[in-house]
Length: 101
Image 1 (cartoon, rainbow, N blue to C red):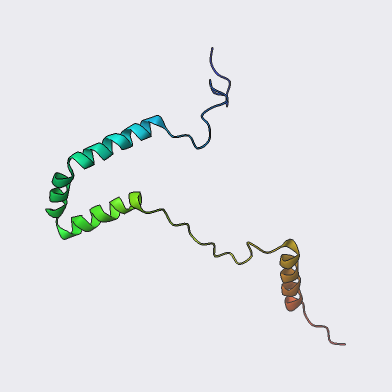
Image 2: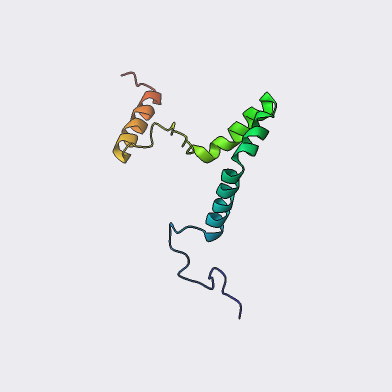
């Protein structure tokens, strides 16, 4: 019997924050490979051209450093509705033609 659209065979699903077993296994395999072959990997790295060394280093950095979040450049983001209304009112007032009495 097929599933309804938007409903899986496991409605409770995996718990938030739980690790993916395949990813953990692959990480363990890669760690073992690198540990067992560290000297060969280091030798291969040292035999690269300067350009390829930099590329390899930059490519590997993403796994060792956390990704930086872009800072918000929106100065209005943390303002209250009242503060925003005040700015709008001031802008409107500055563009209204002045009446000469």
